[in-house]
Length: 316
Image 1 (tube, rainbow, N blue to C red):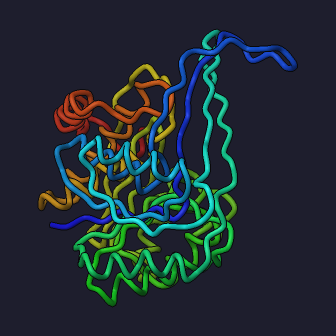
Image 2 (image 1 turned 120 degrees about the horizontal axis):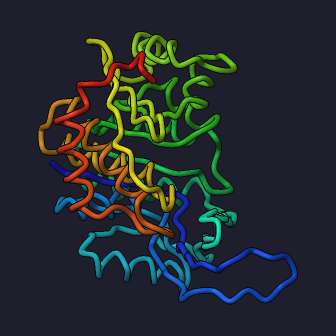
C-alpha cells in the first residue's frame, strides 16, 4: 500500500552536547549531528528503518532544503517537493551531559502561502496514496484550519488520513473527521472540551471522539506508560517497557511510523499500537535527534506482545 507523508514545516535538525549549559560562557560542544527533520519526514525515516517505503512530500527551499533532500535520498527515501524561495528552517538540540537534560531550540518556519501548500496536495493527488500522514506544526502563512482542508482532501482522494498535530489545527481537522488521531492527554482534553482528564476518564474521552465521528481510531500517547488504543469496538491499554531514556526528540513520530507501517502490512489495530509503542520507546533510548534502531524496536515489540497483557489500564 502506498504511504505518503506530508511535512508542511520541515526543518534541518542539528544536535550536539556539552558538559554544562552556562550563560555567557563559550561552551565546548561535541561534533554536530545533522538530520532531515519535521514531523512527516521523521515518519518516513521511521518507516524506512522498518524496511517499508513511503514518499515524503514537503516544501523545500535554499541550501537547507537541498540538504534535507540529499539526506533523505541517501537513506533511500523517495521525495516529492514543492520548491519555495525562502530558506528552510533549522532546529537545534543541545544535551547537557552532566545532567542529561536536553535544551531544544525550535526556530520559526519559512512562511508558506496557501497556493504553495496546495501544490503539495496536487503532488499527493497524483500519487494516490492509501495512507496520508500529516505530522508536525503548520508554518507561518497558513490558516490554522489548513489540516481541516487536508482532511477533506483525503476523503476526496480516498486516502486514510492520519494526523499528529496539536492546538486549534488538531481540533478543526477532527471536526472534519479523520481516520486516526494520536493525541496526548492535554490534546485529548482539549478535543473533548475539558481542562484536565483523570486517567480513569481517558477511555471514555477517546470513545467520545469516535462516537462524534471525529475519527475511526484513537491512539492516546501516554509517554512512558505506553498508549490507549480505542476503536468503536472498545479500548485497550498498551504498556511500554521500561528503558533508559536519552532523548524524547522524535519519539512521537517514531510511534506514528510504527503504526502506519503496521497498517500498511495489514496488521490488526492491537499490533499496530504495540509496534507504535515499541518504536516510540526505542527512540527515547538514543540521544540527540536520532530516531529508533530497528533491532531495539523489534525487541521491545516482542516484550510488549509477551508481557503486555499482564497490565490493566486501571493499574496506571
